[in-house]
Length: 83
Ligand SMILES: [Ca+2]
Ligand SMILES: [Ca+2]
Image 1 (tube, rainbow, N blue to C red):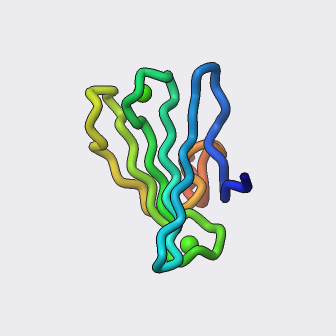
Image 2 (spheres, protein in one colour; image 1 turned 120 degrees about the vertical axis):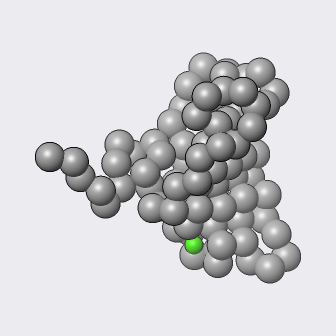
């Protein structure tokens, strides 16, 4: 099952890819296998590039951070660089 921009693989990590009728693709990843999603990535137009990433940064089970730079999660930094 091909997944656009797969998140980093970790022991127990599970990704669920959902393709919606409007062409968008949603990738939900549970990094630690506790059954609660830690990262949700959405490809809004189905072009294979993830457009929005939601992250549960404090692991309270709620997605609290929104990243709109594709590839920031799992690739070590996207387009932003810090001096
Ligand atoms: Ca989890
Ligand atoms: Ca896209």
